[in-house]
Image (cartoon, rainbow, N blue to C red):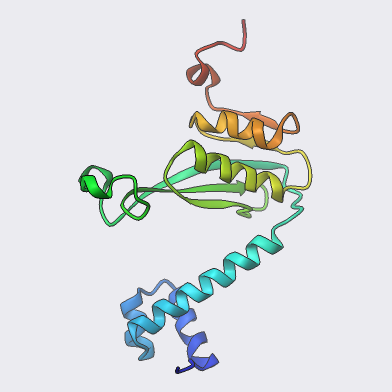
Amino acid sequence: MNRLKADKQKQIISALVEGNSIRATCRMTGAAKGTVLKLLADIGMACADYQDNAFRYLECKLIQCDEIWSFCAMKEKNVPEEKRGQFGYGDCYTFTSICAESKLVPSWLVGKRTLENATIFIKDLSERLKNRVQLTTDGFKPYLNAVEDAFGSEIDYSLPNPTKLTGESHFT
């Protein structure tokens, strides 16, 4: 098995970090597409492991959460019946949390926009924070239960329009 030299790895990673496409990186460095893709996957896993271990006991005070929509392979409406519901086809969301002060992203998750993923995402976020925070989310209903399950009463939680979500006014 061939081993990519450290200077070649650095050259490939530098090209990708600068925003070059996979093919452009291959042309610039002379590396095969499979080599670039494997290195990218390996570096991605190493970065995820580092973030998972290093981003603990964070002293954030104000966290904002949202989802970024994208799609894999094709838009949801074009996914064939036999592929519906499978990860890797159709709608794909990146759940993100960001510290409003430092701009650090303590937690993220890629998946379908479901109650299960919202719960996993918020639980992961809660395990990374050291103290009580103010959390703001959009109007995605599964966040209501996910936040309560993960944080209990140890959070200041705000929604853009709670009446729209629950159907009841908090001012009566």
